[in-house]
Amino acid sequence: MRSLKDQTMVLATRNRGKINEILTLLKGVHVDIILVSNLGLSEPRETEDTLEGNARLKATYTASQTGMIALADDSGLEVAALGNQPGVATADWAERHGGRDYRFAMRRIWQALETQRAPFPRRARFRSVICVAWIDGETATFEGVVNGHLVWPPRGANGFGYDPMFVPDDDTRTFGEMTEKEKSRHSHRSRSLQLFMQHCLNNDAPTVA
Picture (spheres, rainbow, N blue to C red):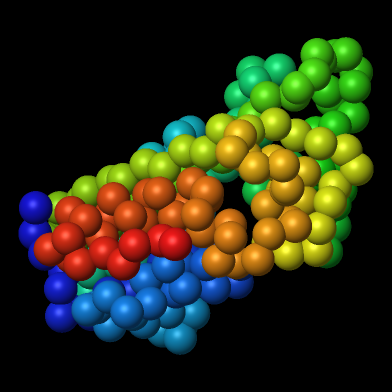
């Protein structure tokens, strides 16, 4: 696979939580990162019906518009008792007048589980798909998954999105109760980025510890 070592790459997301997490996880690797928000580029509509499709759409669009290698992430929460919803519509479940409200979204998920009288533990998983796109159209995708269960009420003020209601299998705390470094030991995005670094940065991947 083509190496990105010592090259420049556009990070194709405007989600501040994702940006902070990705930049932290990529700290120390040999690649220069430019934020797409600094380039004045419009956002493409996420029209695909899979995480893989939307990650590829965002990465290829950004690469074609900037003439630079681009990296994009699409991620979602899949709740077993809800048929793996919200999944690709994870952000849409938080949409309200005036923007996204994840407290509202977490309550919406829990109410759906209550309506279905879903058994405990209420199993769920986070999935992250990273796509890197080169300017000649070549792409590569990397997936990370973390399994766990949901709790109510939400716990913790850290992280972002649905983090305060998700407990990974190998811990008793929600992502919202963990520090950024602690979350990186478990998270789906950490796992997809580790694969990306191993394959695209000549195994120049820092160990998450």
